Amino acid sequence: MKQKMNFVGLAGLVLPAAALIAYSIGKIWDWWHTVLLVVGLALLAWFVFDYYKNREKETSGRAVKQGANFAVQALIVVAIIAMLAFVSTRRHYRLDLTEGQLYSLSDQTEKVLNNLDRDVVIKVFAKSGEAEGLSDLLDEYSYRSARLTYEVIDPDEQPQIAKQYDVRQYGTLVVEAGAKRETVTKISEANLTNAIIKVTRDQDKLIYFLTGHGERSPEDKGPQGLEKAAAAIKKENHLVRTFNLVRRRQVPDSATVVVMAAPTSALAPGEADSLAAWVDKGGKLLMLLDPDTPQDVRDLAERFKLTVGHDVVIDASGFGQLFGAGPGMPLVQSYDKSHAITKGFNVMTFFPVTASVTPAKDKDGWAVTALCKTSPQSWADVDFASGEVSFDEGKDRKGPITVAAISEKKTGNKKSMVAVFGDVDFAANGYFGQQGNGDLFLNTVNYMAEEEDQIAIRPKKVEDSRLTMTPADVTTLFYLVVITIPLLMVILGVVFYMKRNRD
Image 1: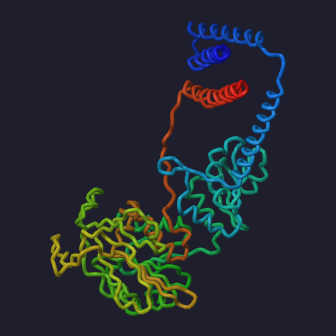
Image 2 (image 1 turned 30 degrees about the vertical axis):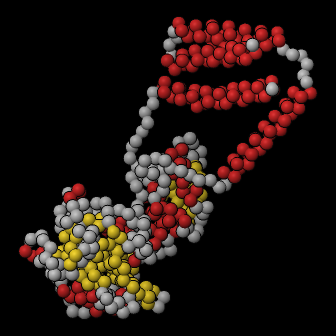
Image 3 (image 1 turned 180 degrees about the horizontal axis):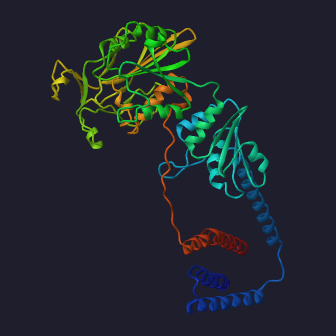
């Protein structure tokens, strides 16, 4: 009989609650709402009447003992939960379950934060209560590095600080490290990370592009120009300059990396020797070539144990056709897994009309690494002038074919580097944004500029993917999560306690 009355009391609570919840969702009171409310209240009244009628007025010692045991156990559980909460505020793991990892920082940003060697403070100028979105992003940054902190400042409440930092609009970030300061008005992971790099870098790196031999220009915005590559270098917080070696007669002392982008005419007398002498003293030379490269430029690469073939690499695997590329545009998926430039690099790259780049057998103290190789279904075709695409046994070379390599050698306290790519078009405006082409180019520049913390896959673009809910959906979710589930836990606890008490 007692068990039956327990069900009566439970029904007396559930039926009126169901009626009220249904009304709050639909905003319409129907006749069945009234039935549920009346029946529920009647059952609840019956339960209360029966409970007081049959209530035992004496409490046994056993019941008191059980109550004390229950209280002690409850205190222990609360203490354990409090300890876990305390520990989790200091050591916890964040898991991003979104498609595309939208709320995870890019590899590049994580490397920058992990390698911070000085304190960085970010000041967020926003109205009170309107900085939640910015706080989510900055929480990710501060979670990765104890050296980075941020504070939110309301320009309306503290106008003197806004004036001090020359802040003219809401949503502005000011990044500070010591005496250096950068202002960010267009908030994104890429812009914020670049600002952190700027304020923590001791000196700017200069990337020089060689001119005077028909090279591709870093100012050319056409499909074959390198304007996008130059702009990307600037976003990495390097400076871009051009120079003519005939006029200067030597590589500028300020040059960090010299880029030779597909010269179409031979070098002037002495230019190759000047470049080689600069490399031997610890210089870094990046050569972006093609199958028609002049012979003296090939000879310059040969000095550093890298041979540029008189060939065109053909890819018959068919993978490139999936992306609208023909056999003359090899798709590369094989990279050296140990070198910093390509370590962890798992993005496809395209090399439109590329020559092979083969490490020499006699390396003479140079450490040569084949960075990128084509598929086994490719070959180096030496008879490309005829326009026919076919493999000639004994004449052409079977794949995989190396299309990019780097040669390195320790020179005192410096390191000499020469990186050679058999293709320049992969970094040209028409292909720079395709798959991993831009990342591969920038990784090479950053490695040669000795900025290894910037070698990574760049920050991703966040696509708009929203969950749309009606007011009724929101109310339903509220009752389910905030009320129903906790209420069920309480009811189960009471039922188990009463059952144990009865036993």
